Length: 239
Ligand code: UTP
Figure 1 (tube, rainbow, N blue to C red):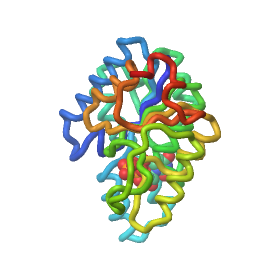
Figure 2 (cartoon, protein in one colour):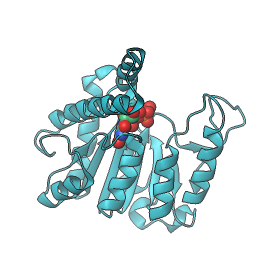
Figure 3 (tube, rainbow, N blue to C red):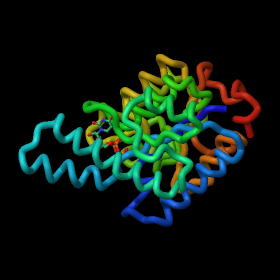
Figure 4 (cartoon, protein in one colour):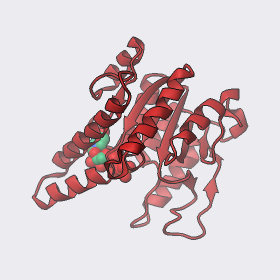
């Protein structure tokens, strides 16, 4: 089974906390030991936002700011690589092709950003499609997809399973409201819709949850499947 895991910066290393990086590395090692072929994509978190904000104040243009964001995601990727003790390709992988090559060699590719104008949500969806993954998992700081942003709308309801087209609709609606943020961005949702990639969005603040979701299908997040139905998942993804 081939799985791409997207680790938001706030999930991997809140405040550069090494215990958290170690716990994420252990979860990845458990999946690898269970025979799962992995590709990992790491986000920039609050450190990327701080760098981007400082450079914006200094007058950098948006593409240059994206490049700074990519650099920070790759620094985070280096921390995870350091904790993975030789299981991963030794430096952050910078393209989908290099990611596939690393997997074929038996190394775990760890990517940060790839190109300006997007986020690592989209990198994860693109990598999953490129390597023909069976499953894409977004380990985020929220417990799945909601009908609206729960921070902005107390009527927001958690969605346990949905189609990729529903995901796109929910994200378009959420992003139309100022200050709202969705757990996965719109470009990523469109890529998931186009590829029909099976996807889980879950709260990854406890890395063990990713292991349970991948190996046993046990999770409290959101399943995104072509027919919107959780029971359509293969046995290894079902509770
Ligand atoms: P993130 O993927 O962490 O951005 O990349 P985000 O979704 O805004 O942050 P989270 O999910 O809250 O952690 C950090 C920044 O790096 C640039 C973008 O500027 C992005 O905001 N980036 C990342 C790119 O330009 N291209 C990429 O492929 C990835």
